[in-house]
Length: 372
Image (cartoon, rainbow, N blue to C red; front, side, top):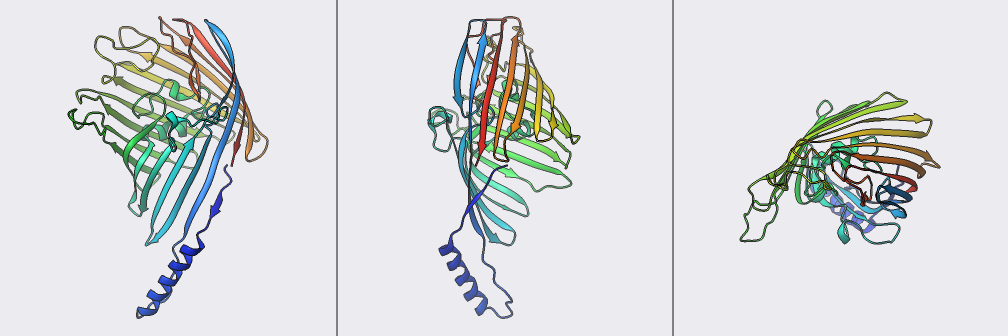
């Protein structure tokens, strides 16, 4: 849970109040005038950990930050009540590496999120840099919460590339909720420079989600065209999580093909997961011990091409809260390669290297997370 600090705008509120009062005074039959509410929230996460990594080619000890369990970040989000049930809103979120202080996401100032939008009775429409619809299913269902042993190790987020889950230049529509169901749709032009094809690099995605007090489930589709607008990477993802109170169970499955990134001559890679034809599965859950929790997941990546570069991943994380804002954690993730693949075990910082073909690798994290 984050602690939110609200920054009020007294001058703006005073002007709005004066305007509303003047308008009410000049309207016959006017009863009351209300002042639109406006607020900005400052929030963030500071995460750092010690990582012991081991593979067939050696071992390493590191101090890492910004992704061991939660990505370290600093953000601003705000809303303004426009009246009639409509709101304007924005969110600016910057990721950083706590161990070095450097900006994450390739050095972007607001690399995690940067968007502005309007919401009302018919849903919300926003523009900017945001997560793809598939990512919102993964982050809500994955028992590892996209940190150590993340589902992103073997499931695609639906955005260009394999890691960030974020999409530039996106336009996103989020529907209202009807009986627990909601729809999210996104389109992001590739913005290719002439003389390349105008639609090259375009990203599209959509999801249907169901939420109840005890269950979340959904199905998503993602498609990213290549730069020549001839083929595309695409995937369908389904997932569900059910909360039984003291424990929860979750499952995810993805069926995809990277036809835009992989060629017929090289349909898969021994080191870069996601082939021209693949299936990927995740099962797991979380057990609660008072405020403490133990989460575990098993992931199976099934490369369906002739190379058959498969992998199995087992992950476990234990969380010990010191308060509502601070927690300690420790976890292990182990990846076993099959038939010559050399994928690396990963935590929130990404995949580690130095893996022998067909071998195994593992990462053990000990860390602290503080929410503000």
